[in-house]
Image 1 (tube, helix red, strand yellow):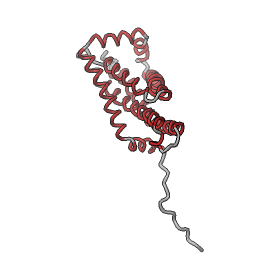
Image 2 (cartoon, helix red, strand yellow):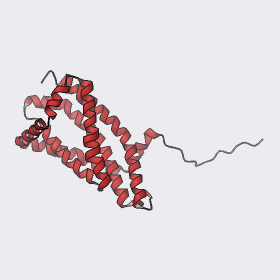
Image 3 (cartoon, one colour):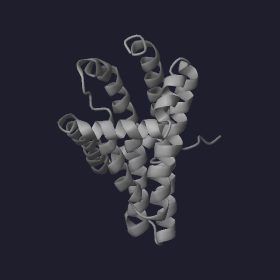
Length: 216
């Protein structure tokens, strides 16, 4: 009877939940730069809002004009529905329409559009009174969580553009194959990003409803 000889150096399959982190590690420099850019632009907007209160007033007027302010006041009494609405807006308006879809058409377009959003969001949330500073404390955690989710999508959008224009960096022979490999990386990064968006939506809804509702 022969004893089976174990095969050495056989590649092990990486579990699905570990693959996004592997993508981040393989592109750590780009990931760190995107972190610095995203949080930095939000801080720039925040500083602009503190220096120029009229900019904050203009953003607030825009939210009232498009019905966002009224919608928030209506949903704040129902945290579960509020969280669902926040998640929907973050997934479709920002993630899909601002970051992903433009990047599928024009390389890196979503990064530029997100940069504009980060600055305007920083302006919008800039506190203008002592009471708003108190409210800003829990809301700042929302910004940290959600920005981290968007950064993962930004990294995916960056890789699509990089592999599309320089397919050999992905080990691909054609731009089409590079584009498809970028899509694959984006799909992997979307898994933890979605988890972060859900956590962020829940925290934002319940903090606004319970922590901030009584104060307001």
